[in-house]
Length: 190
Image 1: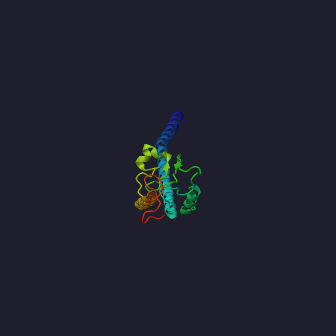
Image 2 (image 1 turned 90 degrees about the vertical axis):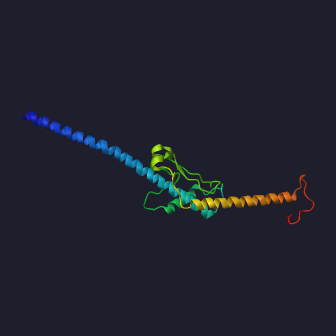
Image 3 (image 1 turned 180 degrees about the vertical axis):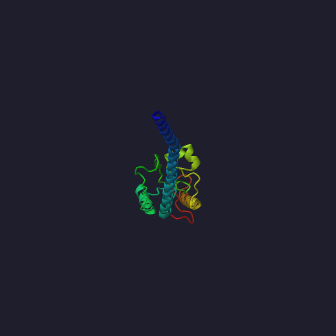
């Protein structure tokens, strides 16, 4: 009877151990997948915050295409203002930028079309992240995109008109041989 009881305990302990291993084998990978999803979603939210702050600074300062929008310090200050003080504050240049293992790449110059450059995360190129739109702003259409593009076109047109007016002014003052005209053309300013 002693032998049966000992064998039964060993069987019970083995069954219990097997059950724990099965549960752990299912829950631990699920936990890490869920953790990756949460980190990817938080990274996307941080990238959107940076893009919103860059937009606000570019419009507020009336930045022209190709010009620097702001310094990293100005961007960090605005991001701190926009965030809830109770949550973990995101600051560029502080480690880590991305809640996962990635780093942010932020271009602080307005693009030639007048649109702000979207910040990028180094993990945004992984296939799993692209499919789920994690660590990237792919597929994100901000409400102010059309406004920024229209503003950029207007600024480029104004710059082109100013350049043409300056070129006309210069050609009115110089003849084809390259010498200065003795008398400026009628309507031209000397």
